[in-house]
Structure formats: structure tokens, C-alpha cells
Length: 190
Image (cartoon, rainbow, N blue to C red; front, side, top):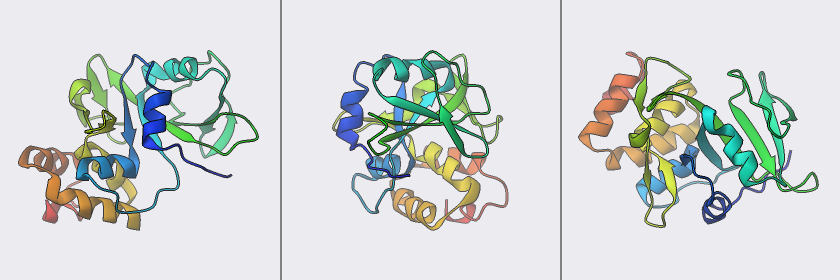
């Protein structure tokens, strides 16, 4: 499956009319927090609250949408279909003949509170879930993104943690430390 990730300015332009919160996620979120690029990316991730999922289809009605059904099988996401709790990722592209451009990740919320899919006890006000870059692009707060990456760390997650650590303030470090499992190897470095 070929990917040609949309650039961050392109994502912002494509989603400019979306009137629900969304955030650049994944490694790009860490780079936006750090203020510089430091590694390659194979895709671009955008986080959206599950309850707002139809807003992205409506924003890009001519695009092709595929839901990643567990355990990783892609299937068409029909216009207007509401994806269930078991679908966390959606891939999209302008047409069947073009590479994949954006991966949307769906997270849960209860009222004004984001609820982690990895651990429902980890929560945060939706209004405090992200930040905005100098270029006006919303991105997931680095401590929240690192929490998601901490589940099963890969070499790129370790790079992201090392790059983000110097820019995390005391409150961000405390939030991440409280969210991580008691035996997580990052705790000693926070």
C-alpha cells in the first residue's frame, strides 16, 4: 500500500472548513512541539474525536475512505456510516488511483473530556488536548502523544521521546508520569 503523506500545510488547508477539533498526531505532533523536523515519516496522522467522525467525510466528500477494521483489515467506509468503537483508524486518499494521503485516528470523549483508548482512566479536558503551531496548525500536546507512543515503544518512539523531553515543562512531565504504567522505562527520565 503506497503512501504519499499530505504535508502539514496541505492537511490544514484540506481541513480548514472542519468545525470540530482535530489535531496533527504521531511523530509530526512531536516535531511541531519541538519546533523542528528530526526524522522521516511514512504517513501523517490526524486525531479526531470519534463523535466527530462524519465531519471529515463531509469536508472531503470526493475522497475515498477506508476503515481499518481490527486486526488491520481495510474496508470501505461508506458515506454517512458511523464507525463503531472497534475501529480506531481511517485511511483516505483523493481517488483509488492515488496513494494514501492521511490517516485519521479516532479517540473517545465524554462531554468535554477526552478519554484514552489505551486506558480509560487517563483523561484530559478536550480544550487542553493540544496546542497550535506558529503556522496555525493544531497538534496533539506532546505529553499526550508520548503517552500514546509509550504503549509499545519502537525506535522512532524513543527518538520522539528524546527530542520532546527537553521541551516538556514540569506540568507536562507530571501528567505523563502519572499516565504511564508504574514500571515504564521513561519514568526515570521524566
